[in-house]
Length: 438
Image (cartoon, rainbow, N blue to C red):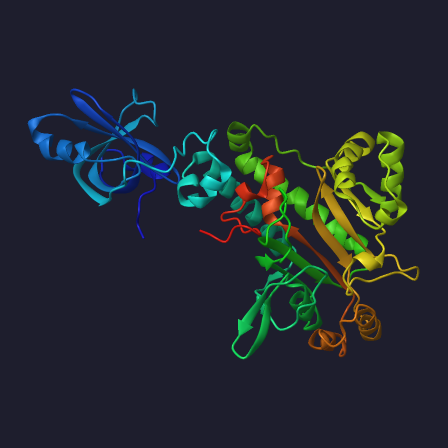
């Protein structure tokens, strides 16, 4: 593939080139036609003078519409007076590779008064908006640096099945599907298989893949299908090792992202990427509620204090800022009753794990895993899952090192990074209780 990208055109001055691109705008004046061409890397002006020599080209341009695609052969000229890159393309041949209808469902360059559901119905139009495309440039770059940190630290990327035979990975609902003559389920996470890799001797693994949750949640931060960044690693001393690795990974990725795209993110989203300091602050769940009551007069019933309420989670943004001058805060000492059976517990039944809150929203649940066969069988029985997860329990019969891990929802992380109001916009295609198309 030798396709020339617009960002690289400066290397082709005074050369005959072929450029494939989309029409961004057309200005058809008395003596000249200007066609602005774009691809994912930038824009360039194509100029056609209206004379006898260009009669055929002029007629082609007269029939063009915005968003049509072209294959243009011509000469690239330096043109200092042209604001768009100081260059222009002088065509010798124009081939229309696709012709767009002139009337579109909405103007994707002005989304202020366009209903979000309408935008999602025509997501392929909505994503032509430059700001929306930038969301996924940021997400892709951020994911690359998260991966890079793990590769630099001897992790292996794995790919686990999304069709599974057991419906009991966590307390969340699962999607049931027909699998030939029996039932199967869409995976809520790769948790079982990450741990299988640890038992297999991989030591350090991660996966970036879809997860499915059949929760009827209609909020700004939930989706029934989302992309999860899952990490698991062996030979830890405690769940604090997991917290440390996650916080170092986040600082690394944020630093690299700011270096590469910080200025562009500021221009498009008016957002500054703040690099968090290490270590991230940490508080117990009970201390969180105590501080929220003392500082902000937030009170809840004792029975609600087994987990963070939605409002408590939001208030953690203020608490982290006021108490630690930080955007992140780890919350620890959750009761085991609210967590999956494979999370390790201490002698008092407290979970050896954590939630990570960023700007008032939970982005991670992490923990030290139970790796001792007798104990994990006991935990599964307590939850009434021992028969359902018999295949999983086998992983621990033949030796498995102490290990732990975490998962980050990339769509939610992107939403928070760019201060986007809803996860529906930070996902390429949103899936929720009421949306299964396009």
